[in-house]
Length: 109
Image (cartoon, rainbow, N blue to C red; front, side, top):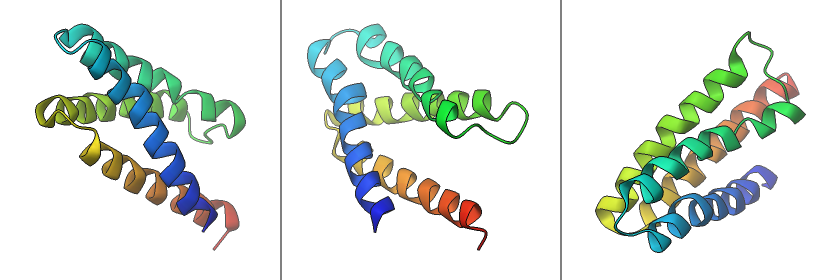
């Protein structure tokens, strides 16, 4: 239940910050509405690695790189649909699956 609430809160707020804000503020600039937030979205995802460091060599860099590609994908969808509705749903589902997997591994189930 906690991971579902966290996924809903985190996914929604990150989409408002990284897609909604930049697309609304810079609607005619692919650099500022799409590329810039996608790259920083990836760097933003290095912060959880400070609290829960990856046990795999290169895991933090792989996680941030994957987040950049997710940011590019979510950004493209948000720009094409002119909405963050679908990216928010995808982000919530991605967070929930990741948190559920982490809880499963950390809990030793």
